[in-house]
Amino acid sequence: MPGPPADFSSRKVTPVEFDAVIFRTHNITRNPIFFGRSGLHRFDAPDRSYGVLYAGRDAHCAFVESFVKSGSRIITTTELESRALAELKPSKPLRLIDLTQSGTLMRIGADARLFAGDHDVAQLWSMAFHEHPSRPDGLLYPSRLDQMRQAIALFGDRSLKIVELSRQSWYAPGAQRHLLAEVIDHYDLQLIENRFVAPRKPAASSSSRTGELF
Image: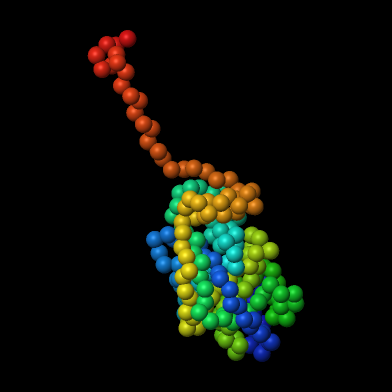
């Protein structure tokens, strides 16, 4: 897919208001409100001049975008225990470019490879959206693994205030475990227990206590 057209800044791009809870999977030892500049992810700044926070509109999206790797359906308990699901809420409505709506990709000169193709090209588009005169806070786009789910990329230099509502390990018991089971079943994933549990030593028999061999 080509990069943004030369006249992109003059094309009509109207951000929509978004005022709902968003869901983010993150390293359990770190703050979920983090705008990364690694350059490794789809809509990161190509020159790392601004950070990007990735999230989903629901827990399913937050799960598949973080855990599921293309071509694999295996999820381990170690992975689940090391990551948490956070619910976040913007303090004021976000202004997002909605790439999920019919006609939007055609109007801007892009196609669905923007969500599943080469990261280098997607990052050029990220910069074009970021620099557009409409000054959006970020993007709303289809998940690459479940196009019925919507993902979000927020630009870190937009003076956004995000509030953390909750945070819990993906492998926590109770309601969280029920949510995990629902997600695993929905995507027909395989959950593998890969923690090592040392076997308990057998209780000593009467013969061994008296020194008898048989």
